[in-house]
Length: 79
Image 1 (cartoon, rainbow, N blue to C red):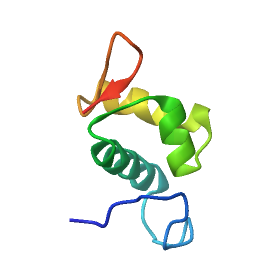
Image 2: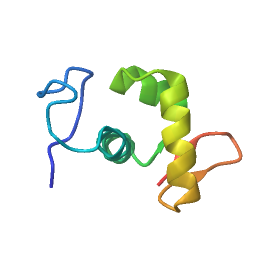
Image 3: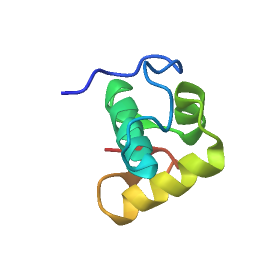
Image 4: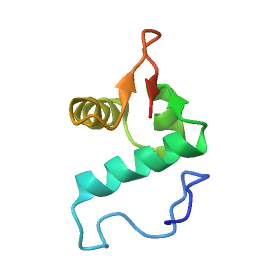
């Protein structure tokens, strides 16, 4: 299992993995959600990841459509 991400300072510079950036970001958000207990708000994800809110919203919307995340009535997101 990949290491958890407890802070905004990641151990690798962005864009250097040779992978697909949007996938890396989406998996990072899923890991952060799990670390936070499985339910988070967009602002929490933005603060912990350092990504802009519009980027997080777009990624979360995709994760919802694909069935990996669900949006709660209180507008928070859950695994």
